[in-house]
Image (cartoon, rainbow, N blue to C red; front, side):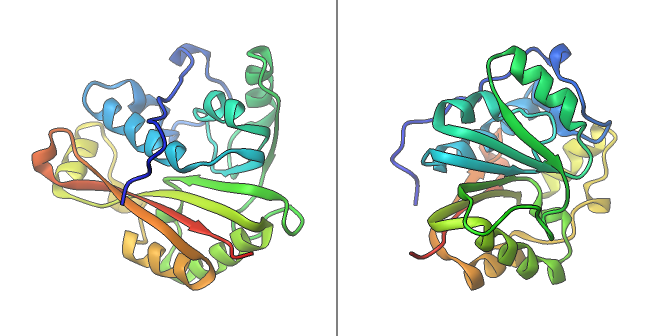
Length: 220
């Protein structure tokens, strides 16, 4: 089932402006022909599920590629990331009129109180956890969500085409992805109520579905 919300187009800064990210940040892929279009589209599908509100938490915000869009949808943007240089990212977006509250930390033990957020957003993060960690992750997500709040996540569906494209770029995804979309969807459903799950096809589409977006809700 697809959302009826108008399509959200990802708004990016020039690549040269981004700061505070390491060599593994996928930002570089956003500007590559064909693959870049797929990368931007997967983020747009996640943003399209975000309903807006008071506070959003993006886990694994990296370069802050979503922040310009999120700033139009939420009053407060919070972010949690293991490796990003939070002060550099905050300073960059402050210069563009976007205030953020960013921290370093783990999804499995988040430094937030209960019921703080309207939305928790995770784009290409959960596949890096092992299947045994998924339930703990979603328990933490549920804890920090307000009653009636939503979690929106995006995870890759591994296909031979995707593996091949990454290898051309010198990146072996099999060394980084440990959980499947089925592992993640099942764990989400144990803690939260499913709203919808949508899938994105490759470009060209003949290579099949390559990305899954899950939208789940904490019951009131």
